[in-house]
Image: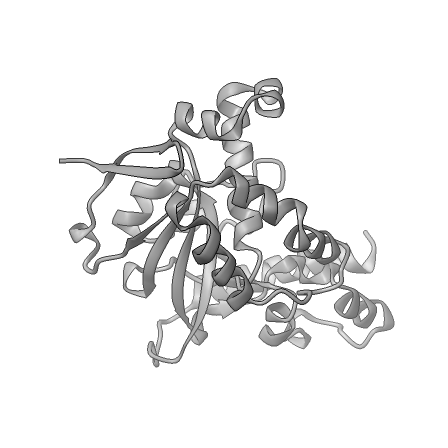
Length: 261
């Protein structure tokens, strides 16, 4: 095992130990805005229970890339990427690779009642820990190979945030969730994944950090061009006040949400 993979393994052990020994939050109001991209297959579970680590739920966005089952993974930029790609995997499991590649994504969203979503949260800083994939970022990788980083504790939360992903030691309690955004625009999906955002995501995969697009840029694009096909569900607390979703339909240029009675 090379130094990078060895450090990744150490981080998983380190963050697991931190999660299992976590005593609680002393200052819940010292928070940072973060996002969780996933697919609407899990929407009602999130509306009732918040975001739960994989070890306590059936949620698994990426079957082929197992993560630390004790953590919840979050982002300050790449939540769209995670939403679209977890939705892709979910739909392929339902209809197959060929149909996913050849049929309209809007039609497949409607058929499967499975849409990309992201969850907007304010997370207490005390909950934050390392995402083990930070080891693949160029500056962190260089410090590992040069011996400057010897242990997971040598990597900071800021190092993770600087490349766009972070993790929570515990579940994301409903009290920390503000809203859930349902992404129902095929055009917005294409513009993001095939445009500047997608190019910056590819650079991120290759270790080059966040890129230039800001959260404000993305919000402006979302609201100005695609608001009819995006639905924002305000999250209620306590969570049992949230209405569960019965069905999501993309009808022409509009996204229609129906709720369970």
